[in-house]
Image (cartoon, rainbow, N blue to C red; front, side):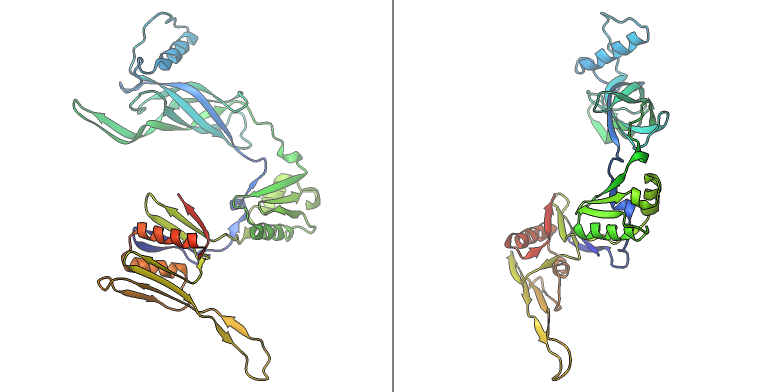
Amino acid sequence: MRALLIGLGLLVLALTDAAAGSVRLKDLVEVDGVRGNDLVGYGLVVGLDGTGDGIRNAPFTEEILSGTLERLGVNVSGEQIRPRNVAAVIVTATLPPFARAGSRIGVTVSAIGDASSLLGGTLVMTPLNAADGEIYAVAQGPILAGGAAARGEGSRTVEGVPTSGSIPTGARVEREVDFDFGTLDSIRLALRTPDFTTAARIEESVNAVFPRRVARMLDSGTVQIDIGAAGGDSPSRVMARIENLTVSPDVRARVVIDQRSGTIVMGAEVRIDRVAVSQGNLTLRVEEAPVAVQPNPFAPGETIVLPRTTATVAAEPGLGLVELPPGASLTDIVAGLNALGVAPRDLIDILKALHATGALHADLIVE
């Protein structure tokens, strides 16, 4: 398998046949039930250098600041608080599978008011809740904000996003997710990219490791492993034995187009039928001329048909003529178009037209 990257009028080989090959099972599948859980919290950042929320524009900041001070024994009821060194933020994190109480995870902090920067701020103790409303972690610590902002009398400049940052290992896990992996009778492997051929290869590779048949393909995206047939091993040991098995995945032919950057990525499996396309001053023609090959008289063998493809790209005299050799694929045609200096936008239009006529045998994904 190989993939080709076409962008800014250039053809770049992104992955060659030599580099492609087998992939570890752990990189192809997810284990059913072994997943992270999203956490979210509402907190307060202090210690900003005058870049915090304006209390008039963000009244919720005053509310959380008053509540925080009252919990610390400071009575501010009825007082007008007008600091510019605090900001209200949303804190997000992902609780990884099998995270235990006391372990630490990273969090992301994002301003929700009109604060201009979180640089130099410190997140005050913030509980992080899951979808069930329970608190699973507590975050606190200095923020690492990516970006910078500068303001003068008449102008302001911003580099990056200073209103968002992170705290590596900034949250401590307080509650564990109740999931006993060791009591499972079977394990379901969910393919990240469902495909019947890939699932069948995974089934064969897993069964080759054990004396009995333990793996069974349920559908294009699921392979089930019977723990009882694995010789008495625990689910964890079964996964340890099979997760480094190598499998050659099979993929569908796809052409992915990013219209914003003018980038086109396609696989070597992409094929086209006989077709002619005229775009502006360019003419693209693909013709099929199969050749029948027969064995010599009275010799064993059978008649076979060999494909013969001729693809040409013609332009106005000032741009020159490109003729591709027999057996050309879509990647060869795109290379010819790039040789003529065709803009990426024109390439995208040509590929869309090929797909609309049914001549492009691939999934066309436009982003």
